[in-house]
Image 1 (cartoon, rainbow, N blue to C red):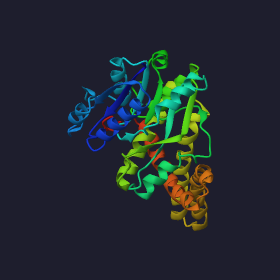
Image 2 (cartoon, rainbow, N blue to C red; image 1 turned 120 degrees about the vertical axis):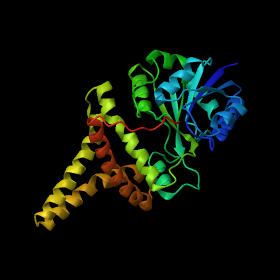
Image 3 (cartoon, helix red, strand yellow; image 1 turned 60 degrees about the vertical axis):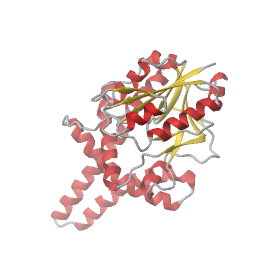
Length: 322
């Protein structure tokens, strides 16, 4: 019988970790594989570690580490020939593993990630933001350049081949890790026939903006580790351009040129509109397009601020959590 080791980084996820572990156990049982649950806790102050132990998970308590290091420490004690990385607030479907094992056995792909959706209770901005990456079910799963690490599945030898996650990255470690996997010959498949549920959605605007500010802080580190490339540069450069246009609009307004200011403001709206149309056109939903337009406008400003702060060696203090 095959064996799968499921590694889950965690910080203060007592609300979700029981659901996450139970769903993982059910999926392993449905696929007829032995299941090893490993939770790597970043120093939680809630009951998360105790709950994880009640579900039979091995719990490693390792405060102060970044998320890549947490995943690497969990993998170091894993004994399965298959590895899965799941965030502590993600519920996997029961039919998650079997079809992916079959795809891997047929030689079509090597590393897998399921699309994410939010529960019905999520606020509109959290749901819209998640839907931007969710493809309609009539769009087939496809090979991609990189995958997010909210859920990843692969054979152990791929992890060993690239040496695991980069332990110096505060965020973006998933993109960096899967880019290296692809460079070493792994085929990455984004799967949408099944959908995982993200229960750790942002419950208020402050949390949404804080998370986006944190996520965008990885661009400079990715450039340092992978070198200059248009793929990694385009979004931070676009976000800085928006900030420059804002500055020009304010300057024009102060100098008494309101028409020039209006033109600059209009130009700041265009990138968000293009991004929102690109991500929502497949859903054929004008409401979603408008929601994403506003969210992208905010995200571009947050990304510019995060990139500038990272250039100034600013380091956000945020515990690593799955």
